[in-house]
Amino acid sequence: MPHRSIAHIISQQTPVTATADLTVREACQRMAAARVGALLVVEHGFLTGIFTERDALNRVLAPGLDPEHTLLSEVMTANPRAVPPEKPLSYALHLMHIGGYRHMPVVQAGRPLGMVSVRDALGAEICDFERDLESLEKIATAL
Image (cartoon, rainbow, N blue to C red; front, side, top):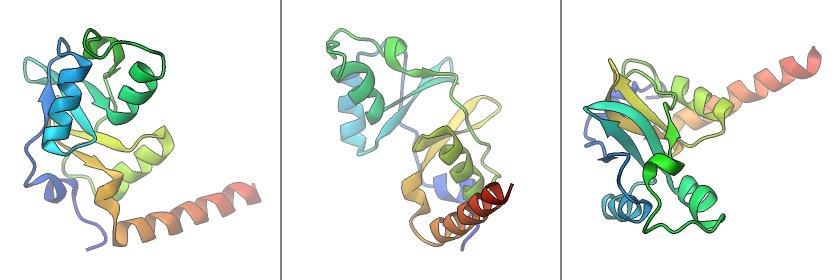
């Protein structure tokens, strides 16, 4: 199934969410308990941000902020790019590659349904995606 839909991939997911007033420590504990690398920041049922393990490392620990007192609102990525569930995984992979990130929220009408990550691509999509990237690089080189 090289062109699985995002809806298929997230069909068994329960989104891991938090509000922006949660501390980084609490968010990391929630992520660890759910065994995920990112969580969706939600206010009144709508996606307002994303917080990832990279954010914990680069925006909190490396600069020396205290995870016990730092709120997600201070270090999350606000208004993240998101994808609708009816798109193929390859569409999300392309956006993640261009944006340089590994997790992408899935939303419908602003409401989070789940999350896709590059790990979801392990299999046929990654091979197709690598071929597409090679083709794009050849075209860019030729231009």
